Image: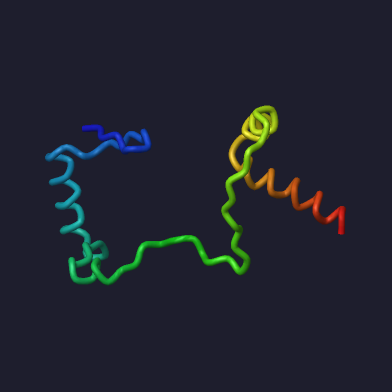
Length: 93
């Protein structure tokens, strides 16, 4: 069975039979075990490490050509735009 996330990613879920086979494999393997619910409740989700200097969110109006250019460079276009602006600031100091 396939399930689609709210972001459009598709995940294949095991069938009832496959799930039973997986659980039987876990039960047969002494090195594999499932964590009890009490342990799962104490675990924290993994997140990004905290950075020393955080960026400040701003709202800015830019020309469509500028936004289109940076977006066309692909993932990380906002970071690239920040680097260009930082280079400009450093050149003026």
